[in-house]
Length: 438
Ligand code: LLP
Image (cartoon, rainbow, N blue to C red; front, side, top):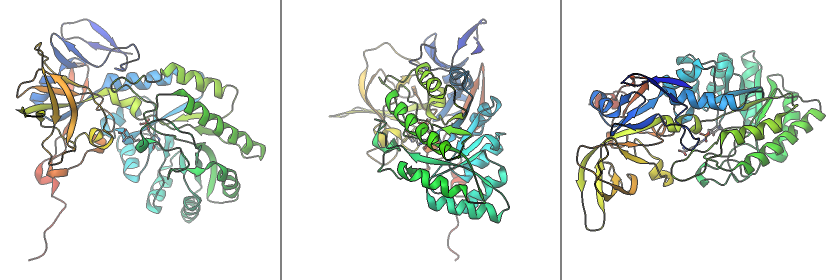
């Protein structure tokens, strides 16, 4: 819980900005305009321009602390899945809380180090780790490699021995459980490219035990993302704990069990899993067990801690549809185009008129370039809009398509706003390129 000063004095409580958890959002209307904590979004737009991602430090801290506190009594480590938002300031906020990190590339490891995070609390996921990434992670002293195939295990053993090191290893097992989420973000079904088939796990642990470059540390799963149902989590966790017990029966004892990430949030009308229920399930499963619990939450920690601030450039009423053309686009927020995802869109200074049904679209030359369909809003050119739940998988999945410089990122901390990534310049976009010799 963080105390945030109000401009007019006094203080109010912000608990992670989690909508649907009975707490307040970090982005609230105050005197007819949207604020980020104690700073009007309009002030941020004036100072840093649009489009711009705005994050709330209090919301980031509140979410992390809420999950950590819910697991009190269960020895655990939260490894923030930084693919959701890898801005150094976001990593710094979590690192200061003592968070671990879940990485999927050497680039992400470099960011953990740059932000002051602890490689010793970092797990390395992903199906395609290169030998160079393995060397980098071994030298940094990460907590664990989450190995996803027999071929990867062999490469890791060879790389570790060649470096005179021993690689700490967990196997990512595919529990073949349907998380009942969007097919693009389901990862634990047997058709999936991720993990090792459940039936192959025991033989692989036996093989790994004999390898000089490998030290067995744990087991891990990740069944998917934006999960709102407890049942698949429970089923997958039971399956994996069953394996842990069978391994122990063969004398292979694990230090930790990593149940991955995937906790869903409310974008529109989903009913997210109350964190207390999720934690109660985990408490039940881990009662009396020796292994430490590791989790890899991404979206749940950051999504509601951010908005994408954008300005209406033009209104273009049409015969079939009315378009509100804004200065943010699919290159800034790909989720609607890629998954048909729904994000809330709120005017920064709402008007009280009846409104018109708008398609909220960007300037990119693609029909899929939309941020939202069918939103009834009372808009005028120049208006500012806040696209909600843009703390996760927004900037992280952005691109320079159409030679668009990537947007600025701002972190609000109480009544101060900090530019934590300045807007790219057009010249920077082609600085690494060259034309052919004349
Ligand atoms: N651990 C592993 C091994 C993962 O692959 C992921 C996400 C996470 C943890 C974190 O999952 P979370 O808690 O954020 O659900 N771009 C998609 C989401 C892709 C998730 C990929 N893996 C989206 O925008 O919905």
